Image (cartoon, rainbow, N blue to C red):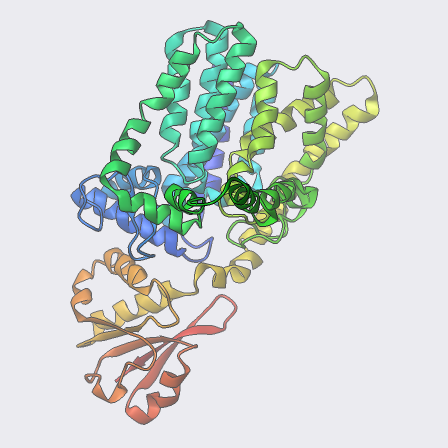
Length: 535
């Protein structure tokens, strides 16, 4: 790589990082509850090396504020903790690690494409396409773990490319080790990383006509999982709670269902387990994830946190580039790495279909993105190399449309999307809680009452913004209450009460019981969701 190529790569990486960090504290407009919990755990690790429950450097994190059966994977927490060790806790800083991961993905995509394609231009194109992919842009600006499997997959793919060039066993070991470590990045990785290991073994057999290197690959994948085996053995509640959370019966429950049955009855029981609502329904759902409208036009009717609903998973020009790339792979030399790209693209929805069936859930299949972008780059190469001038012209026009379409994405994302998505991000809790902190700093406030009846996880948000404002002392004056449990006349004079607009009984009784409404907290569209009262 010469100096000019390094400079161009640095420019693309820096551009991606700036794109993902610019205004990230307010776009998305608020923090999601999961973001708050990841941040609280990371802050606790950074400050004390213990999680919120007092465990020393745990392998998995119990998110008790979200639910007793909620355990989250550790990679995002341990990635976020170093940032919070040196930076203050803010809405922007907790999203900074994800932006960094997004930029790393762009760089890794460049190095992969540089080895797969003819020259640096194709590599820069692949990196730029990933940087501008709407789903990648959106999730690089969220402090959630959905994006975190992607660098492990890209690292594996890069190491595999290098291994097939050099045949060094340690590189193969590194490739499969990345998959093993990637298991800890996100719940879907428990399914996807073993699948990528299977692709690795198949690729070795195709390239080398032997299974001897399989031992190295399996060993590399297995050693990180010894930690999981020990953790599961010493924390059985983790396994039980995770299965319950995702609606999966424990293995013993399956076996109990067959106890005492005749052979015919047992076969009937097995047939019911494979009924449409089970395996058959999941197979049908698989096709939703390849709906062209979802992939390239509007993103499907998905959670607004995952899509603006005005753009697809990929930019619209890839509606041409991806199919052409697939055809190029199917009709060309079909190298082993080309086939892995195709297998990775087609298998991306597997975990999303098997665990929690949810159509158009791009957050559960973000591994799709680099495979799709690399296939699209193959498609661009095929069009530009075509003999017919019309195909070359079409490729140039479509490439010119890429930045134009992304400009529309930015205009919508930083504009109307902030308003549309506000309620999906739990409303203006930040404004309400920071207003209370500000008043408590100016006035004598003997107690702070927070309504949790219609505001779930408010205690987690309160802890977050108290740390942000360095007013953890206010926790000692905080009282949580639910609808109908607060007697306004018993509230000490000067105290503050936070309620949502759904706390109608409190609103009705407030004035007659001595509570004065002092502030309505506006949402981006001007409609108030929260109100602050004072005794």
